[in-house]
Structures are given as C-alpha cells and as structure tokens.
Length: 399
Image 1 (cartoon, one colour):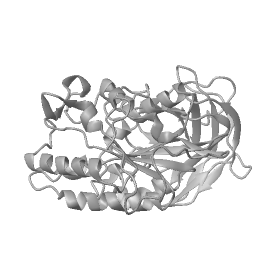
Image 2 (cartoon, helix red, strand yellow):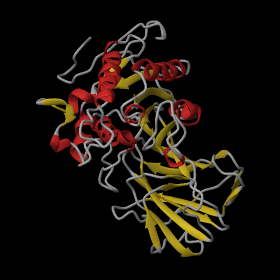
Image 3 (cartoon, one colour):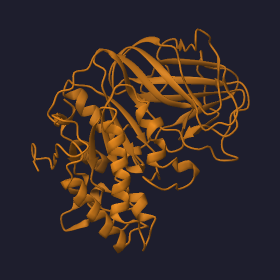
C-alpha cells in the first residue's frame, strides 16, 4: 500500500484480473477522437410522469473537455414507442444559462428532425462549435408530439426549462415551468485532440444529491475542475444514478442495477480509459438488520472489474463513506461496510483505491461523516463534502 502526496490512496497492482505490466503510474497515450465530456444515465420513466407535447425543452450542461466539434447522444432507451425530435439547437451558454449568440442547428443524418426508435439511443451528426473545457452549453429540443412519460435522468441538481406550446429552439423562451431532471439527452461527446474519458459510476453520492443546484459541485465536477487547473483536462462522464444499487433493483426512477446497466452506461462511453466505482451503500442500507453479505457485494464488484478490464480500462474503487445517522443505518450494515472497505483497500484485483471514507469521516467517530461535510441526512455530503472528495483524488491516476 502507498500513500501519495498526503492523500490517502492505496494502489494495488498485478491481481488475477489486472492487465500485465499496467500500473497506476503508466501514462496512457491518447489519440485524437471522441471523449465523453458530459453524461447522465437515463432512468425508467414513471407511469403518469412528466410528459411534453408541442413544447421546447432547454437544458444547460457543463463540459469537462474542449474541442472543435461535439455530438449529442439522445435517448429513447426505455421507450416503448418511437420518439420524435422536431428540432434541436445548441449554443454556448452564459452565466444565466441562456444562449450566447445564435444557436446552431443539430442535424441527424443531415435532417433537422428525427425519430428515435423504441429502446434505442441516437447520436447526432457532429456539430462544429469551438468549446473549451468547463464551457457550458444551452441545448434546446422541440418535442412536436406527445412524448409519453419523460425519458429522464430524474435527479440532476440542475434546472430544465419548459416552454409554452411551440418551437423555440432558434429563438429562446421564457419558461412556463421548470424541473430538475435531465430530459432525453444522455451524453455530450467532444472531438478532442487528446481523447480520454474518466467514467464515474455510482449512486446519489456521485450523482451529486444535496449539492447546490446549477453550480456543478458534485465530486466528479471538482475532479474535472482540478484536471483543467493542472493543464490536463480529461473527459469526465458522470454515469451515476441516485438510489442505484450494484445488485438489486430499487424501483423505476433509481435505474437498472449496476451490473445490468454497465454495457449501456460505461461500455458505450467513447475512449473510456478510467473507471471509478463508488457504489454499494444502498445495497447495504436497504437490507436493514439483515443486509447482504460483504462477499455477495464483492462478487458484484468483481463482475464490474472484469468487464471494465476487458475493455482496457483502469479500474479504481472508492471506499464507502461513513453513514451512521442516516435513516437506514444499522449496526449489521456498518459491519458489512467495514468489511467491504477493508477488501477495497487490500485487493490486488484493481488498479487503485480512492479513500473517500478516510477523507470524510469524523476522527472522533469514524462511523460518522464530519458534521461540516454532510447535508443534514448523514448520508449525502454537502458542497463542502463533495469538494473534499474531489480534492482527495490523486491526479497522477489519470496520466
């Protein structure tokens, strides 16, 4: 085990599923290509949930990587009928989230509209727009026909704006209503001179639950900020879903379990080089007095490790944060968390460990998060807690 730069970071090498000769210090050469610069995993629509008809939806997304072209990945992956996109535009966004300058049309095989088949994603044509890392984009979609329940990422910590009836993709609009889910856009990819993507994978603590809306304070955002400040921006694709579990299904809006959604949410990300996993506390906590065993959860982890390594990714696991005081805390679950964290710190099956447990725990009571880092529920960090997490990651892992 090693400790680097005062940050608690354990690096394990050469395990039974590790790539021969690969270490966390190995620099991965990246060629020009597409990088995942933003992501939001779709979740199963709720029956009777929010729907749109002859309305325009505007969303603002911040990019982790810059380049000369972008493309959008739209989603109808849980849809049971075709989804029509009547028009779409993209523009750089100002501090108020509104388009700066004239929005650019988004084309689909050269056309301004498209239909996404049921169960499918759809990539747009490349859009020539010069973007820098940490730029924000304003994306508008016109939904000309009844959509049915929204194909959304339900917990976004960001505002989506909905118009009165009509196509306002080229002109902007004052919102009739707002909500805080991501609608129909699941990824933004950037054509980058050095294309390499970090995929962050997990539950609400990676999704940024309880962070301040519209401020990009999730720990993956902090990581992107630090990489840009260090002069080595990387694509960071956040593929977390609040409430998600590694092995079990927790309800529609919480998404398919991690093993079920890996191929869609991780394997599909272009030039994915690094895979960070922080997930399992929901598996433990929802078991109450009879949680699943550490061995069962670790078995799920091993599936993620093997599948990521088969795609050439370096695999980093983060320790599970303290959660005493949370609504589903139980002594039996805490014992499983401790056993799982001990395995993460010691296993040689992964390429490195990010010790979020040590970074956030109260020295006087290590089973509990520091009071100043938690949001009030003793499960989710606040902005300060997410910042501590983002700062606890050694950037040398992404050389």
